[in-house]
Image 1 (cartoon, rainbow, N blue to C red):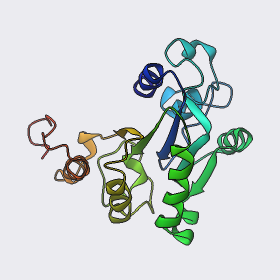
Image 2 (cartoon, rainbow, N blue to C red):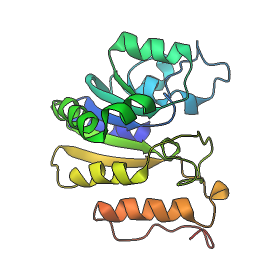
Image 3 (cartoon, rainbow, N blue to C red):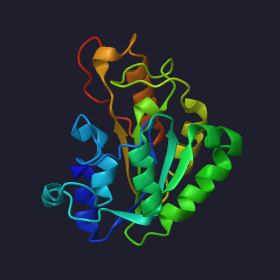
Image 4 (tube, rainbow, N blue to C red):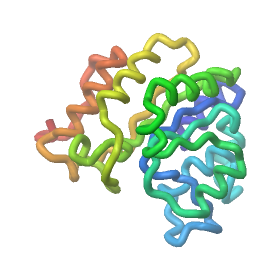
Length: 204
């Protein structure tokens, strides 16, 4: 949350966002049974929930009109109710497969790029199929095929309105033979980042 809040603070404007995730991350303290923050980040960035978080994330960090959530397949009724009320564009994994990446990505980019503050892309690795990216804390079956996603991310590499690409939720303890770590490395290289992250010994 602080990552995007910091960028929005520097830009002094709310941001557009393409949020790629198996989960909606849109609980509030009133709807979450666990009250764990990892289930609330998108809601907080949208200015919802506990007002104490506004000291970290002055609201709104994200522009409601410029946000698209892609690839979700595990959620609760309270989350979808909140996001639909806010007018966030929601693309489930089933809609993604039926409509295809090119059409979905084109529309998501149009919304995100319409925001004067620029836009970001947040990729939670659990959005991907677990056999491709096992190194996550909360894997969900039947996820995104990395080849299609890579193609879209590469198309944004030189977009001057793209402020940052966030790759979240890598858990090396859950990884299998460095599979997820190598995938993250490839995604970074696709964006022109050639300096390798300092992975723990034995991860890759």
